[in-house]
Image 1: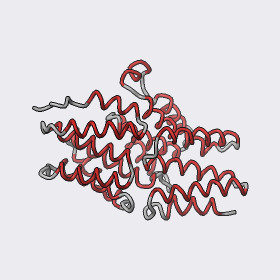
Image 2: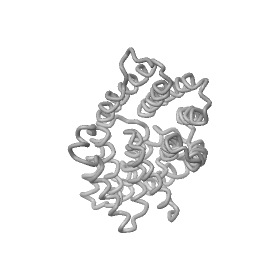
Image 3: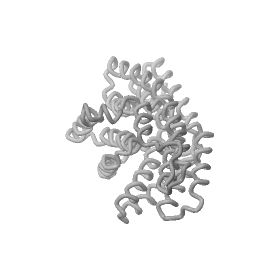
Image 4: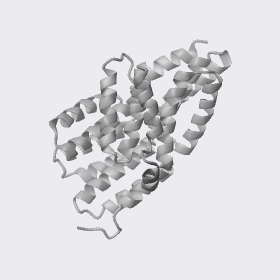
Length: 308
């Protein structure tokens, strides 16, 4: 009867840096099933929301994920599990933004995460700091993917500030440190501030702890850091290695990110291969289910005969 609680502790905390993502996901799903069978509803649904978070970080298809989120949100409402439901809301807003967002809808409707930001501010006002960090994490991810780096910066800085008062932190099985590093690299490029270079190296050290079963993340980050530091001679080759590793790890969204970053690099150098990498990223985002991101990337992609 204690299995759902044990699984949550083991796979959320102790083994999150050691076990492959797909195995953790399966164990959490089993913890949910056992909890529902034995009447441990609270921890069953804690396993369910952690399972969904894990699947998002693994790049599971967004259409499948949003279906599961809605099913479990209904159960959370039925059994009055507000903590799990509030965490799931953050993920739902993120997934729907990836599926539905486009430049046109943002111009029509204003901020594409407006409702989610209201919930985030409400948690901060009610001093529900852990929940607020969950929202900050998801919103920093989706903002980075959509190249809204100013909002991504706001979210990581807010999360880091809130975490100073917390013992338990939402690491998202290494995805938090991975995206924190990516965001810090981008801000170091854009601002030229040493602070963001420092954050880059600090976040990268944290990301290394979660590299088992996710070696592609280290390759992506190392390549991005090399480009940041001006070591670009082997950049395209290293992007290719990261892309292959992400494909082998079956993290389709991070394979898409690696292709997009390779495209950005090639575009900045006037390299015609930018078209190939953007096209591949576009294809992968569509396979993931991030139709909104694919629409945005279509506008960014140069023509097939691009050159400078």
